[in-house]
Length: 230
Picture (tube, rainbow, N blue to C red):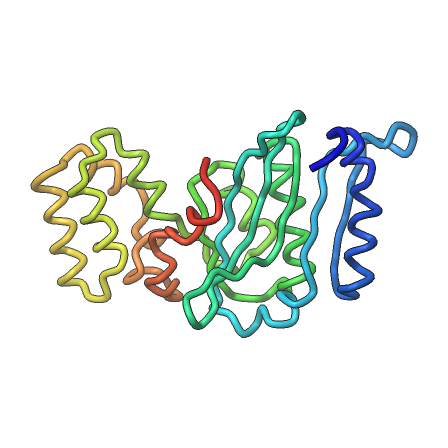
C-alpha cells in the first residue's frame, strides 16, 4: 500500500518470517538469481491450518493462475480444494515470472512436499495448458489429471450457449443414458463443437468416466473464477 515495488520485494523475507511468528506451521520459500545480486525469481507459501485440515477436504485439487498487475507483472499460481460444505478452501500460492514448465514444476513440487506423499491418489483439475499437462504426471504419478469444462467450452470457436450447457450437463452426468443424451444435443446443434470435444478424452472431463469421481460441485470449476479474473 505504501512505498515502492522494489522495497516491497526487499521486505518479503521479513514479512514471511513475521507471519511464522504467529503461525509456526507457516511454510515459505523464496528463490533468487544468485547469492550476489539476489534478484527475486519465485516464491511459494502456504499457511499452517490448511496443511492440518487438508485431509478432511475432498480429494480434489484445483490449480490455476492469474496475472499480477503491478510494475513487475508476474503470475500468481494457486491451489484450492473444496470442503465438505462446498466452500472454497485455499491451500497454497506461488509468485513467479510467468507460466512455464519450470514454474509449474516448482509450485507442484512444493505443494506436494507439504500436502501429499508420492503415492497419494487424488484428482487434479486444471485448464489444458501444455506445461501443466507435462508436469503433473511427473510430480504426481498417482494423481488423476482432469480438465475444467469451462476452459473446454471457451476454446470452442462456435461458443454456442446451448453447447456450453450441454457440455456441462454431460460432464455432470452419472449415467450413460444421460451422457449420451447431452452429447446428442451437441451433435444436432453444434457439429463443429462436437468434433473439438471428441478430440479430448472423456476420461479427463466427464464425471461418469473418470476413475475417481471429482464430485459434481467441482466439475465446472466455477468456484475458481470467484477468486480471480483473467
